[in-house]
Length: 333
Ligand code: ATP
Ligand code: MG
Ligand code: FE
Image (cartoon, rainbow, N blue to C red; front, side, top):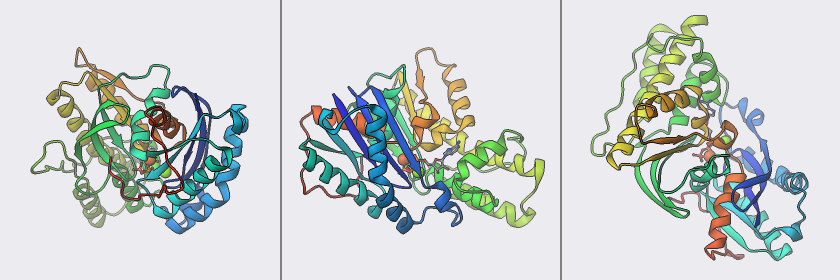
């Protein structure tokens, strides 16, 4: 079964062909990072306009690289939410038009499910059930994944997402967008114990996250001491990063213990963070019966191959979308 996936929920225009929900025959991502950098973040209107220009060439490229003609496709899958409404609409309209023109079935995919199942494209895929942590620019959520299309939310951030904490923190420090990558790189030369940041206590649910206080703490630190240079900046980045990673690891393993999961799967852009990957692997090694799945960084950030994986299983379940499919910017998984 060969499925074409299309993804335009934020600032990546992506298309991919995936076979049997397991192998990416192509995986094309046109990122708009450079376009948005001068504004220090994603500008929704610019993102939509750029998706319009990029989406058909990207789809073409995905088919060409896969060596698959439209007639050979078994179906299409598109991200219809959550995300920026104008950006989502581009992918949804194009997918509907192509599905109608090529007379192929179309599935809608939740972007977060895409992240959760990206690891099925890895050489060693996980099995269900697993504990999934989606940690990205807009989300920080823990899910019990019971099967394709079957997810239960166990905890989420009350305010900022972890990726947002990276991006906003980086902005305060005058680092380029996207901040996660810049902080990750600088932190490698820094001392994570140099500056003490608070660890948020979230009342009510033990598996919820909160990152807005951390961002405020960094703001106060910078107001008091200014933005340091050289080693001082590296130390500050390493300390700030450690606070984010510490909170993620703490809740992740608390959930794994509470619900007795034997598999933990990470996904989303922040799962590309080198310190988070090392910390999760080190912590998992303390457990006898806990396997960790860390997809390659390229699979962690936005791509359409993960959308095609989720779409393959949606189509197998018989889900079909028609011309009435709408983008749903706030679609909850
Ligand atoms: P969502 O998936 O919630 O809709 P999104 O699609 O914008 O949001 P992704 O593309 O999955 O998010 O991830 C982008 C985020 O990942 C950004 O916040 C970016 O700073 C962060 N990120 C990317 N690489 C790293 C890294 N190495 N370390 C930390 N954060 C990173
Ligand atoms: Mg993105
Ligand atoms: Fe994403």
